[in-house]
Length: 221
Image 1 (cartoon, rainbow, N blue to C red):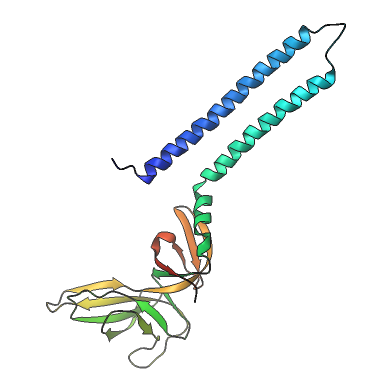
Image 2 (image 1 turned 60 degrees about the vertical axis):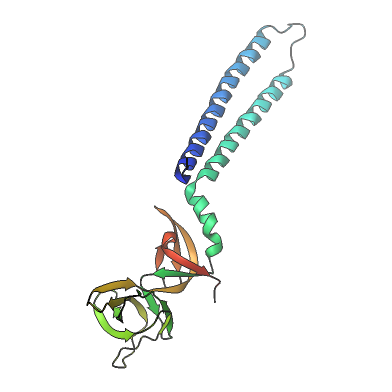
């Protein structure tokens, strides 16, 4: 029987929680027992040879140290179980690497390598360039698989201004059936952040994407 990582994590979390609660309950019980023993010891001490007050102070200090150690251990377990901190530390080594992601592509004036896959039955393909709001700016015919060095120049020779653009590939079969495919590119990872649904990475283009949206990694160029 296959056990999913989610089930394993839930089991570990439940075990950790039960251990913490058990430690706290045992500590509370031991403290009450300690006070009862200390009170009984004081009540039954020899009046002619009473226990030194310094001995009581040592006993109290010892128990206080144990109590603080248990609380510290529980705090460290909580930090270790924090999924957001664990996710950040897991992806910290990604900073400085180039990530391949679908979505907006930043054009700064120099050609950008864009990646795509063409279906085997594609008879023709066009690269569609759209603005940030989705309006189509131009399209041009392409042939062969990627990567393609996109230079930001339209079929009429006009070069785009620096900024982010949405690129896609539209293919057609011999029967006229069309399909729109995503285009991806590499961008440098500058930061890893904690998101609501998991770690996020900040790219040098300014885009923020989920780690699940990264399809490839390579050493920073």
